[in-house]
Amino acid sequence: MSADRLPVVLPPDRELRRLLRHGTFAQVLDHCLNTHGLSLKRLQQQLAARGAHISRAALSYWRTGRSRPERDESLRAVRALEDVFGLPESTLVSLLGPPRPRGQAAEPGSIARERMWPAHDPLLTSLTAPVDDQLRYLTVHEHVLVHADRRLAEVRIRMVVEAQRDHVDRCLVYQWVEESALPELVEPRFCRLGRMRRDQAAGATVCELVLDQRLAAHERTVLDFTWRFPPGPELTFYHRRFTRPARELVLQVGFAGSAPAHCVPYRQRTPATAPRLGRPLWIGASNTVHLVLEDVRPGIVGLSWEWD
Image (cartoon, rainbow, N blue to C red):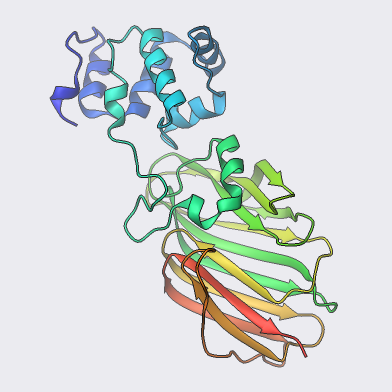
């Protein structure tokens, strides 16, 4: 952070001056809230009185660095924050830096969340979703159970994740169905279910998982949970979507009844691109097919099968 970002008239608070030179927007906001003795509720009220209407959840994310103001309405709120805290004009705005790319990957090699989950974008907006790159997926293990009637029953998931920044205490998980009622997220372990948004018409579900512990950068934890599905159509494929690279994926599909006659892996760059099929996979005596991959690139990895 360069000294040319400092306001012409420096505030008398020595710690605030230091943060304005070397800190982040989140650190300055947190410091100002503490020194002014303001709760997020009271701050929200003061912003509303100045014509800036921002949720307390958004203010909390800004304060902890899980997200930052980027939209026009949010930037108006930041200018109102400067007035609330008695800071010179553009003091806080200058801390934000250039906006991150939208509609494309913000990180080399990644895929923007709205491209990978287009049906979920309105739900993410309503959640004031944290930034997508706060966690790195080390291992993802999914076990899909298909009923004897060839319908999807449940998906059990275990993920080992690593924080990419400080103060990470939650993550979002997604589910999409094409022609079925929406699933329920059940049996969370090492985390608890937070907020949830659902859109039956779009087949979209977003759930927030609150971690058992707040992670510092490079700390790791494990998440277990299950998606349980109501009766739906005959299932002929299942896939996992990655917006960023993952170290390892283990995808298993177990068939409670007779096994399909044919099963192949496939990959897609995004839901809008055509799939590329791989070589057929063996379905063993346990009626389970396994796909184990290392260094998974962003995109879609799935299994497709045909019944007799």
